[in-house]
Image (cartoon, rainbow, N blue to C red; front, side, top):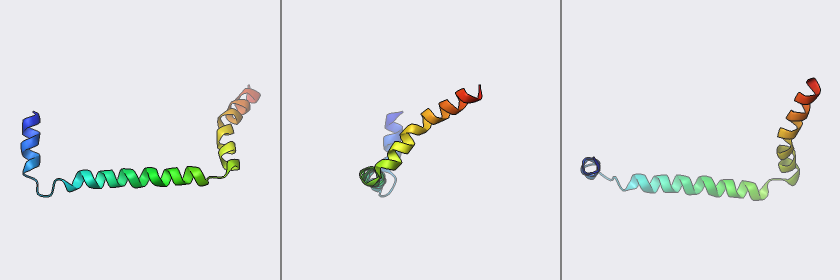
Length: 63
């Protein structure tokens, strides 16, 4: 099976560019995510972290 895939991939022109494009997309996405995490306001992070607890409290009050 692997020999078939390898033989098929060798026939595709410029097949080496696809892994490089994937790596570039991966790197850019996680770099932007890292920058967003570093620049996010502490109030926003605190609000988002408390959301599941607020939802549980609202459900308990309705019961």
